[in-house]
Length: 168
Figure 1 (tube, rainbow, N blue to C red):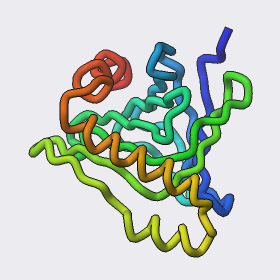
Figure 2 (figure 1 turned 60 degrees about the vertical axis):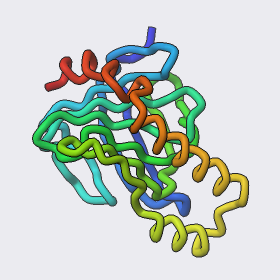
Figure 3 (figure 1 turned 90 degrees about the vertical axis):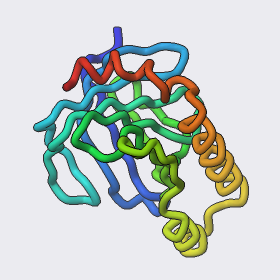
């Protein structure tokens, strides 16, 4: 039986720390693994200790080059997707991801969907010599998310709300 607690570890392509926090396994379905992070969760952000002020739900897809963070108010982003390498699981208790800089965000107030951090992606691509196939996968994931967050596709329309209700 899978563990109730999953350690989520994001690193940058060079191996440096990005995010690290415990999450509660809420469910697993055809979309991936749903993880809940309540407010007050101790975490590490860019290598520094932090505490999550606003709860969220993270969807880790089985094979996708992204993760989806679903947020309640007052966070201004309703959905925040990190472009990342496909998840690598150590058993059921730890998931490793490499954050690839690009983010696709849907704003709560306006519904605007935007691609963010293209400059950081270009800088790190050059500095760390991202392979061409990694660049192609990251860019394809970003294009797909730009459409899916804007057109009412699940899990970005309403299906995440039942999981978010468990951590708010």
